[in-house]
Length: 171
Image (cartoon, rainbow, N blue to C red):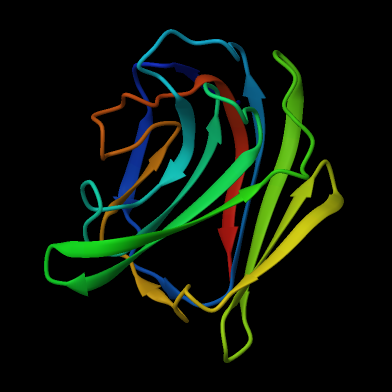
């Protein structure tokens, strides 16, 4: 059965303590409300960041307010000193937008080539866009719980209104 999310609750799994330089994150997503009320400016699909701009981690989200909406956004945090980090984002603008109430399969493939990270977005099995960034680090040591359908940073402020099914993280 798919995980039904009402925008206020989510699933928090055990600590994600894998240090992965290469991984694939994939899932089926159905967004039921593409016009949520402010302050919800994005839906966090998957997140394991320790607090706002701290520690290591990653976040996969879908912006739903502002100029550019309904695309995939990947963000990684890299610790620069204890309790302080820098964020590097990539927005996959080329990937098709989401359609309210329609199931969409998404996958982000992260690889390391020795000089930087390559990210590729797949939507419904089609490769949509790839991106390389030397600012991303080889691997990040996660130690935080994995939040599915919300985030830990804002106390669930960006909770998904919809469903997630067949989530898989593999290396």
